[in-house]
Image (cartoon, rainbow over all chains, first blue to last red; front, side):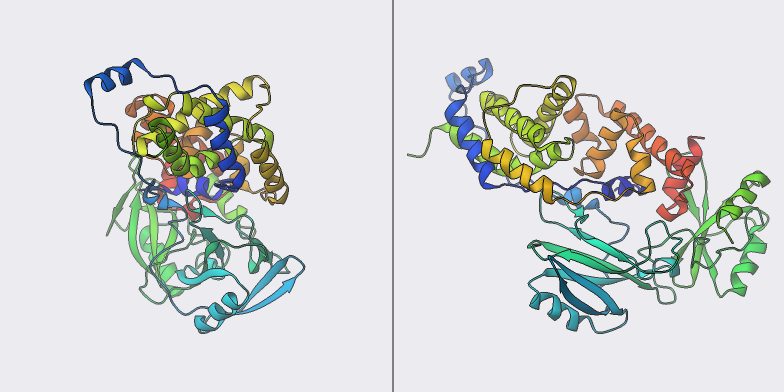
Length: 287
Length: 183
């Protein structure tokens, strides 16, 4: 099981290289031809003398453990997605999302017609992650984030860490397989697969001064905006924080995130955080 | 009659593990020449010591560990250019030219500023998908030591991200907890 931090690192993975190329095959033969023959180790000489059966050949390496790539973003949902505009611009295809709620069959056909072996999936997201694009591939030894797919940023100001993409540019020479996820609004009660802090831009508590308020007060602030509390997270000092179904109403709220459509999780503490820290965090939102 | 046993074993080893080993090396080198050298030296070592290499997935940890040592030496001293792998060198050069630059962002900046040992542990998890037991084999340390060092590395990255004003709740409760713990 990967951690949130590990997923950040996974996203930063440099490209893996061209794989088992002709040059790689050449190198294999060169090594066996030009390099000194294998040293027979003492152990293997003893083994040979004992007539011990050879070790079996290595099987194909499994990549199951590497499936952590972007697990935060990927999930089983495969809901109808957007209609696309695909056009060729020089050595790239430019793909723009025209309608987030259109029948996915259409653009899947369009992608195939363009010779792109790409699947598009729409995943339930928090309001601020709606429209976010996350391309990955499982070609190669491990799944990885496709840095060669350039995201097209919308015009106007964007305050999000990951940008505000409106489309994606795919090299026309791309012949691999890819899986692109696209955030859509989660339906009521549906678990969010891509989300952020609930005070980030476009999220329910953006620019709402809730820090250091009691759980009861924040419950009211959320209710005014049509949101309910699903769970409470408590810092325990352990590696894994504890998630509870309830905490005392008088506890303090130190943060939160959208967990489901219409529902949030709250970070809570029995003690308030320093007021300067709370003020600084609100100021950082540039409201 | 097929080829002699060591050749058969080496071919199977190479064809199975080359993509993972080449990716491991390519991600940790800046020039295609360096990448070709380290890949070539790693598999030349594997050929010479084919009888010592464990079977199955263990072979991959062995190869990662070997590549890791060669990389460390390579970084210390500009090593001689290998005569092997000329075609591979050319391919990697072409590939490197076509590779898009990685966009700078807050998380990348924070990761880059970590110490080399921290980055190594985090990337073995995040890039190669290894667990504690596998990392212990690659770096030649006990599982307990790896677990502790990895925990500290995660904490330091979380702290660096928090300092860079990146709101960690975006990445879930775990990241927040780690950042707070390290303050």
